[in-house]
Amino acid sequence: MNKILVQEEDFDLSTEVDLARANDNDIGAVVSFVGTVRDLDNESINKMTLEYYPGMTEKALEDIANKAYKRWPIGNTTIIHRVGDLDINEQIVLVITTSKHRKAAFESCEFIMDYLKTQAPFWKKEHTTNASKWVEAKDSDTTSKERWN
Image (cartoon, rainbow, N blue to C red; front, side, top):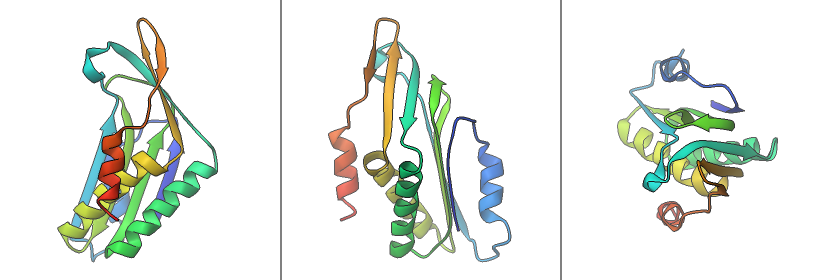
């Protein structure tokens, strides 16, 4: 089962893990990743604005989750990505994968994040005390994704 949400509201990790595990007695491993807003390179970031393309973004996230299902024997996936204005230390993204065994859960969670960073249509703008700027794609994110090819 895929749970895919793009929302302004925050999420609760414990609640989402419980939902991912619900009614599935085959789960032996649950892996989660929570990404947060941080101040990069001491630029005094005040907040980050995340935008997305409704409909297209959810489809891209669904496609990423389905690619993970084809590669690993996983049970459930949860992808929640927040949009709107977020302050430093606020949660941005949650990825949860479940599996019978830890290796599939760890690898599939990392795969989903690597693909999400490069394939999902989100746009990020950092706001500092002096200016605002759109965040460019990082070469390191592309390199991380390419290792799965």
